[in-house]
Length: 78
Image (tube, rainbow, N blue to C red; front, side):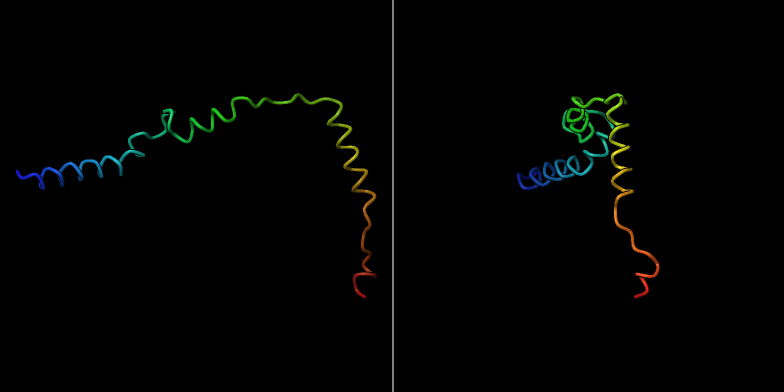
């Protein structure tokens, strides 16, 4: 084989490997995958327990919604 043939063979193997890499990796949490990066990003997040502040917030939202101006049917027709 000539040097050009070997270079083309190596290029074909590299191209095939690059094309098939996502399928080979699959869903494994390897350090370079999106799932692993997402998991690292979200690792510091935590669930906040439900307490009185959320009830107070809900009441204030309901109060604000009740105080919003409304459009009557008569006003809409004009």
